Length: 302
Image 1 (tube, rainbow, N blue to C red):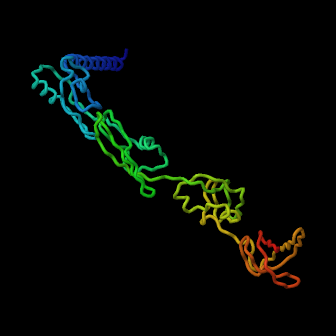
Image 2 (image 1 turned 120 degrees about the horizontal axis):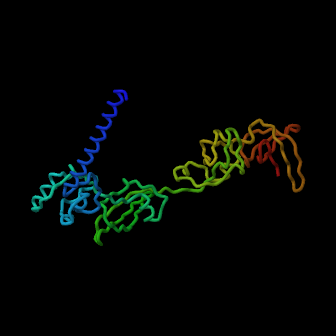
């Protein structure tokens, strides 16, 4: 066997022996300790006992009081020296292993979804900072009252602990109401005239409802002045009423008298919108009459 290979094998054996030795030393030292501290714990109760912070301890000292639990978001570190001092003060001779224990208080959370289910309303936006954090315990939360001021709500809840009032909390919220309004049934291209078939109905937030057109009469016949996406509401910013008849247009005139209908051509002397009454002038006779606009370059006389 080449010398370099023998030397590498010898080093590898020494490494294994040293690793095993360190592990055995750790096990023996742990077994030699009466009390072995944990590194990290989450405590749910108000008080800390030895059984909470140690992974190994004699049963006789499991209920030895160590300290009060820390406040929420304020971790507590208990050192080996502190534990040894408590043991000495209680005339207990035991060895302790482990440098320290990091202790965090368990939390009880009152969340947004919990408040929504409590007041049986999901169409609200909670404005107060959430979640509300309490020390972990068995609580009973009750709805006391709801005060409304415009779109704003003030939700008063009370928290009981051991059948006694623990906290009185007021949570501010805003109503997130939705209204049914006309929206684009399909994508509508710029320049397209909007018909009844292009319109559907959908619930939208109240802030959008304030700027949207809410009646079919205010939408049908208008022209899109911008691309309108599907389910987008119609507004004065994306639609514009276009005059079906402009001044100087050549219009078709339908003269209706009972069941008799006569069609001819005339010149519009003034523009207007649908159902507007405008003056027209017949092309041949140059006679002026008044007619009602019924469509694009179409008027009627009855």
